[in-house]
Length: 89
Image (cartoon, rainbow, N blue to C red):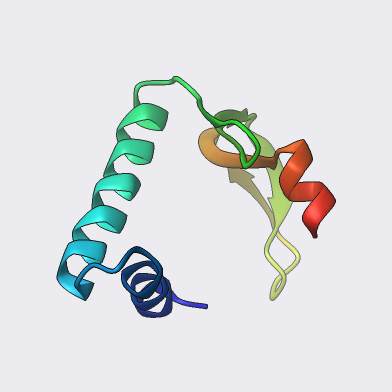
C-alpha cells in the first residue's frame, strides 16, 4: 500500500473526499515529524509508538574497495508496534 492507496481507503471509510483525506494524512505526518524532531515520542495506544533513537558513530567498509570508512553518528526514527497491533498481525 502506498500513500495514494491509504488516502483512497481513508476517504472511502470515513465518507470524505480524497482531498480531505489527503489533508488528514499530511497533517498526521507533519505532527509525527515535529514531535520526533523535538526529541519527544508519540504513542498511539493499541497501535504503537514512534520515537527517536541515537546511532553512535562507527567504522564501516566500502564494499567495492574494502577500505575502512567512518560513519557519523545520527538520529533515526523508530516504530515499535503496540500489543493490539502485534496480536492482529
